[in-house]
Image 1 (cartoon, helix red, strand yellow):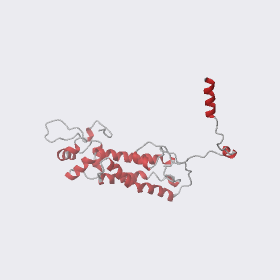
Image 2: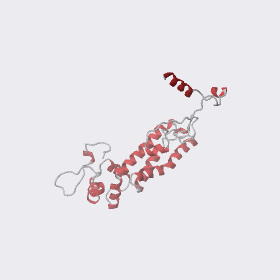
Image 3: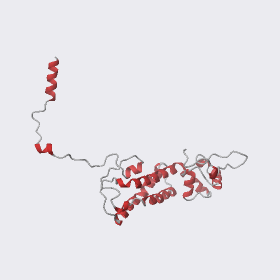
Image 4: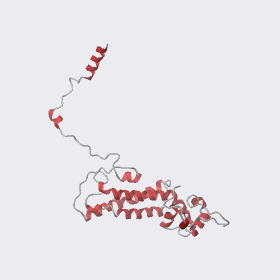
Length: 231
C-alpha cells in the first residue's frame, strides 16, 4: 500500500508532458521589478489619513533649481485647502468651521516653506509618492493636520459659541490655541462659563472652589499642567 501511494504522489507531481517548455533565453532574462506604489507608500492620501508610511520613491537629485523649489511648494499649497477642510469637517460630522480652516491653511502654508527641497528634486514622483528627502516636510505637514484635528475635536464648539456670544478674545486663532490647552484668560473664561457652559464646560480647566458666585478658571500662569491636555 505504501509503495502504491508513493507511486501516485510521483505521478501527480510530475510535469505535464504537454506543457510548453520555457525557452532558454527566458531562464536567463533579468528579473523585472514592480515599481508601482505599495500600500505603505507616503502619499497625500496617507498624509490626509495620518497613517504610518514608507518613503519608497526612488528619485535622483539634481542641481538646485528655483523653479522646481517653487513648484514643490505650490503643489502642496494647492492641496492645503482640501486637506484642512477635510481635517476639520471629518471630526465635526461634516460641519464647517471657517475660522479653524483658515488657521489650518495659514499654518500649513508656513510648514510648506520647508518643502521646496531647494529644487533638487520633485517633492513627489510621477506615482504620487513623497521623495525620501521630504521626510521633514511630510512630518511638519502631518503635525499641522494632527494639531488642527485636535482643535476641531476639543476647541471648535467652544470657540464658535464664544464668538457668537461676543466673549473677549474669542475671535481669531488665540481662542483655539488657548482652549485646546485648557486655558482661557479670566474674562474670556468667565464669559464662556456663563454663556457657553454646554460647549465649553469639558474643555476649560476645573472650576475653582470658593464663595465666588461666577465660576472661573485657574489662571494659566498658576496651572501645574503643561502642554496640551488630554480629554
